[in-house]
Image (cartoon, rainbow, N blue to C red; front, side):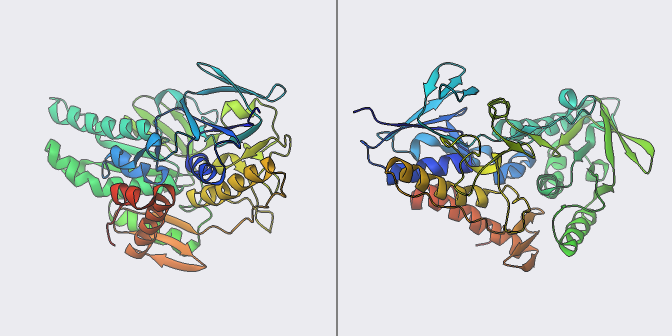
Length: 402
């Protein structure tokens, strides 16, 4: 008897949690499961800003996939997805081709250039472990270059962050706290370093409560971060960026521009002919694609809305909740049982501002300062426990402030 083949694309929060849950729910003879990911590790995306700032080593955020999956039940392939051929139910990878009976798409997003000249060529991003490490090393290289140059170039010490959303704010808060240590290493006065955030809206953290956004801005500004509101990026060059406010163009000389603004859909599923909304795949309440009932979607590439029709923002918590539903529905489909609807839950809002400061909304309650950081540590540690039990928690857990 030929076993149905389940293929999971991507080992982000949604993909890896779907795989871990399926290996517990399905017997060896019920299905063949294949997980495809471009790296041999899963990483905690919620910690990337710490990796980029240098406050957390990248190895702390990496989790070897082979250590958390049951390799007698799951085939793991390190490869990249090129295309999805829905008519023939085939996945074209860089190095091979796979046939599927049921497909779970957990591919993430990529930075979006948004037609801004020079953004692709000269901007840096924080999207995975390698890009975070590159940002950290680039900043350190510029500081070293400045320290060793006879003719000092102040733009080497200027860091501009494009976008005042969660990632931009978290990276700014982490980096400004790390600057004194970097300056000591390269014998540079910390007053010479300049960190700026460009944000198109009137306040930081769009979607957050106004009081929380104001607290975040005040916290960053008090530590030396300049916040430029209603600033539209016009052009990015190798040694400066140009932005517009109130109809006038301004420039900042910098060799470090980090884009945390827009994202775009992974080209693989954008070209697959799936229904998209806001660059994400439209799904029904069972997390099935509205265009193809053999394709489940999980995580940040799934478009979901709450009871008021408002989009539920992509978070790790959302992806984990969806993974539980997708795993259950894949099992139910194989066993000819009724599928379970995913109940969209209003997500709490949380942003750290460094190791000891942050803002959050937890069950409609506003949380400030170290308490918000504590909540994040609890969330991160609980996720590790769900993924790999006590062994993984004790190995990778963050117990700061606990």
